[in-house]
Length: 526
Image (cartoon, rainbow, N blue to C red; front, side):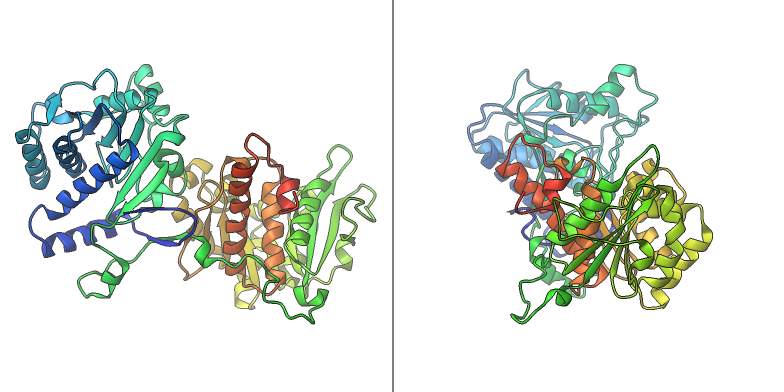
């Protein structure tokens, strides 16, 4: 059993692949072995999390997840812990469980585990063993309202909560939580559903069984899962070499072991500024009523502090051009026409407004290495000619990275932001294939995809990044790493990880202090 952190990368398996692995392992083991291993693992982690618990409540559902819960209850009871189990089957006329789960239920009850009709009035630890992988709460499904009521009881308690494999109501493949989509339920029940995981991340734990699932690390997953642990139950990557196991990971969790953040770490002593390339930021539109200069300066500052040899800024719009930034005199200002786009890494769109449309065609046709962000992405949406230019860049051997947030991604795909968030992995892959470039889909569990390459789910970052300008900083970081010689995919993965890691470090070292985008850009001298 291991705690999952941002130190190491891990393969992520979807529900279909996990079920294949489960079936293959079950066929090679004695009956009930996998469930017994799972239940023992849940019990061990529960005891480690709450060694002095005086009352443990386990909520068991109708399937194998409930069987894992009964198996855990058996061990905790045998270890002398007061355990109370609620089971949805007590409230259904035709309660049936799979064979393994039924065997675990009978073993637990025979050993004296207390089966009760409602949760105990107080408890130190609650275990969510209601649904597991592949199952979503369905208003028409028997017991759903009861499950929601039990989840609400867990949420309003100060007790620690341990979810077995996957938090109930969370899609293990996508990270989509359907708690708010219960139109057939009463207003009270819908409120319970939408607040089931509210404000309790510091007491949430999830034990993934057999495999790590992607949904726990993106969209609503991180908020629902809390601290994630894994017990592979005897399955390991080495098993993939065996002919019986033919399951491919659907994505990878991005850890520190896969990234290279310091662009200058391996540089020769005789290096000069040209050794680390040029970044040119095009954006920062000013008009009579709006001024977005700050967005371009944030991207430029990030590129400068990330190690680019030289950083140029080309501001758009009608305001008088800056000749220097007194706070960062290293930045050099040019008009867009004066840039050498063929040799520079171009970061285009940060605060670009409507003016970015006037330069985007030239940027797409000329820049060999390009990061497109914000308004540059919006300009693509309504211009099919620009989209054709973007798609043609791959065939010319040019490198392109797109950095949309969910709404920008939705506009590019032609759907709603809610649809993007409902399946972020599918959305980022669709964008990467359509435009034949690297795509960074920002958000909780930022995703990085490229045609024909594994998709990465970032393991770093927190809500401190939810502030104006942090996306501009990320674009500048990617541009700097590309200027230093990294491929678009490597630059994107390295920059995304570093971007989130800075927020994690800030949260630990400066609790209660806002992490502004300018501080993020000037890291580590913030």
